[in-house]
Length: 314
Image 1: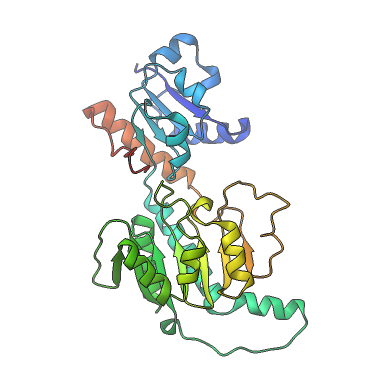
Image 2: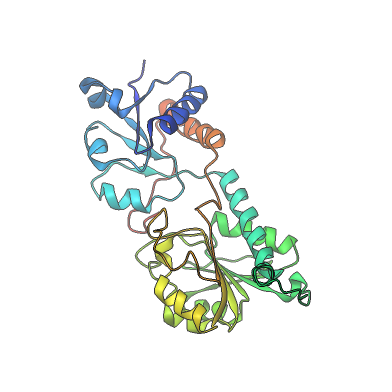
């Protein structure tokens, strides 16, 4: 029998047990144990750890690890906390997550394109006011990030009739829409998009990407959707841009500190929609199958899935 697999999380016991049950069903030939239940000998022998925001001290207590599999797609916190000496990290790459994210991008793009924030304000003020209808083709959506999430989001938006353009750090090409890169490309996208959707990973280069200068580059009256990471947006600069009318609305699903602090001015800002990080939740069933397949290939062939590039942070 192979050595046990360590499940290392900072979840509460009930949530962790739920994940343990799902993973065990996906890998009946493996023995998966929560970190706290491992004996000292089992900790020494464990070659694989499945993790979800683990305590770095717990990971360090597994000296024989060959690699780490994250249950989340976003790994910037994991990379930062474990440091450069940690074993190779595999992040979750799940097509179902990309589908759900694309679904959320389309839903909240419609929310802005169909003037839902304005109608909500009219309701609060008991004001009966019909606004002119805008066809999706009259709305340009700019996607920041053209990885798996951005590409699927673009497809959904195009199928719905929106005009789409995208930006990424590395050069990308897609015959269906304009793909921009570099600082010049970023400013061009911001200046010509009615709705900017942020899907970039959090790296040293993207931290604070959307600041006062970039907001000033945006088309007056444009809107922002941030489904990436909270630190990509400079919150004070965003609020200032909303207050002076440079931006008309912001849909925010991610924040530097989560849950969002009760004292945050974002809660009651009339031009902000606050969401509790729900745009693309991990699907435990599909995630467990992906983790199981990756472990099976490694057991049988010794082949690791693609691992995180620590230089890039993802």
